[in-house]
Length: 282
Image (cartoon, rainbow, N blue to C red; front, top):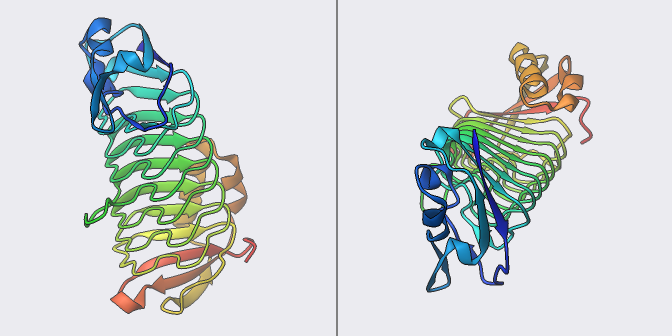
């Protein structure tokens, strides 16, 4: 895999919209072409080379291209947006919409991400090594579908509306999650290893989806009904996947954990499951 290195230089305080930081866009080009790719600051058009040192090698195909962003870019939006192949490694923080609408490939952010990370994602792996702000894996306003595939791992805390309008795919958060996690959810899986805040699964319809709370919950909505406490066999398979495939060793202690099963949101006729580990701290 060939590596293209982008080193930030003199980033403005106004966000830089840089959808071009994507293997699909840079593959098959020359370094000169990449430096000249258009980015936007407010209503002004600039070139990528004005804000980044551009070095390294370019591949013919996106699947063979790695982009390394060598520094923090909290004011750079859309890094990895709509990527379908290849990989991106951000050695620092990333701005809004990181990995949004990506359909394949892998993106690693060593720092935190701003709002809308992985929004409407349909495939691939987005791994955030710190906190992720609001609307991670969610639907954009007015859209009926959020995340429809792929996997998001947040190795920190997550903000409000994590996975709202989620349809398929998986989200794992090792820390705490803010209110309205899984709101309007209609499929997919969310795992919360820290504590889940209020309004969990509000207006979720389910369609086979569930939210697993391994570290306890602040409250369960009254429109969810407690059905049973049991040890679901499928949860063992998921815990092994989190441990072995994603390297999340903390999942191992839940292999034999009993779970309280709640079903709802009955306010919308839903059958979404909220599974709360018995050894989680409520």
